[in-house]
Image: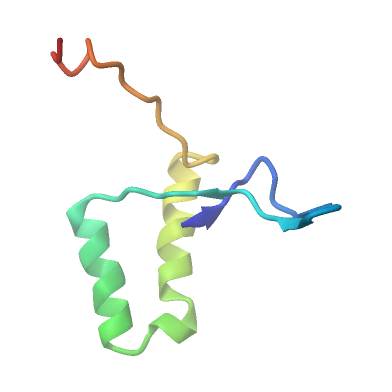
Length: 75
């Protein structure tokens, strides 16, 4: 999960603080890189953040279109 780039700051409401997050889906190659960083204790050095930054360079908002059932061939 990553913060939504379009709303990067928390929103304070009468009911508390709200942060908008995006669920980030990644391909297996990047997943393995993140897991390797955690296993080698590099996670605290920000290795996973650099992978997210790499993805954000390709797609600044980390958003992909949602496919309809028709696009997937589901009736």
